Image (tube, rainbow, N blue to C red):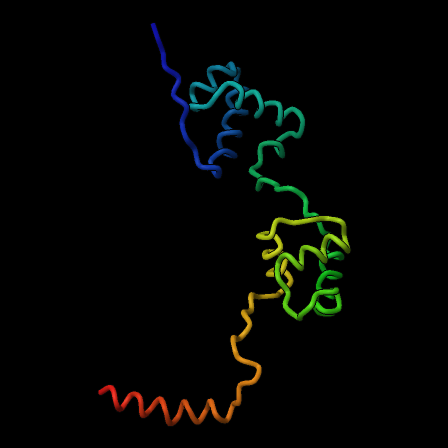
Length: 163
């Protein structure tokens, strides 16, 4: 007789319940392969679950948020970075006052010896309370009074002539 093992797809939040059920079935004498078949999981998963129980007890069966890699900068270093950025880009040897992600990454590397992907630099800046600011495109020699006069008079005349 041929039996096909069907592996069931579960949501991550279901696995704590499954780990507890796996443990309970083992306690009443079920074999690992039978537990795996009954729960629609692999024998390896059952084995790992029971190993977690042996090593950590019931705590080993609890759901945990997956951990990511540890941060490259400590909270103290992030605070120091904020202080450095507040000194301004020119103070760090850049030709103008504009902070870019690449420039921030350069400061991070010089001060702390670590480098980030530029998308991560953006996340760090957001964490520090900084937001994207685009420079206003405006000619340096622009005369504010003449611009205002043009907006109030010439634009109105152009609108009237196009009706």
